[in-house]
Amino acid sequence: MNSVNFEKTILELRKIAKRNTRDKSKKQFDEELFEGQFFNYIKEKK
Image (tube, rainbow, N blue to C red; front, side, top):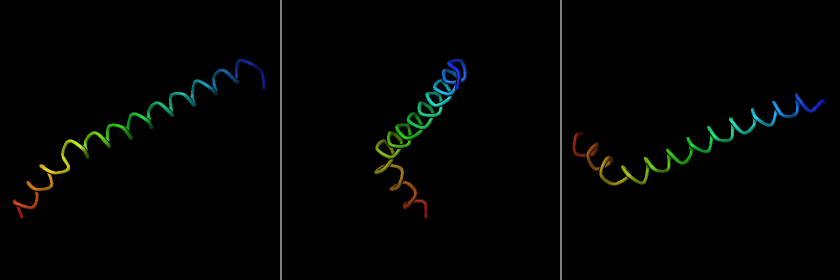
């Protein structure tokens, strides 16, 4: 594997890791923010 391909591979891995990490933290933020209020709202609507 030459250095150009190696650098491209590293950049792709960083993009994937950043995207997945952001999605996970965003999901966790949504759960913390809406956990009580949002689920109570849904229960009241039923």
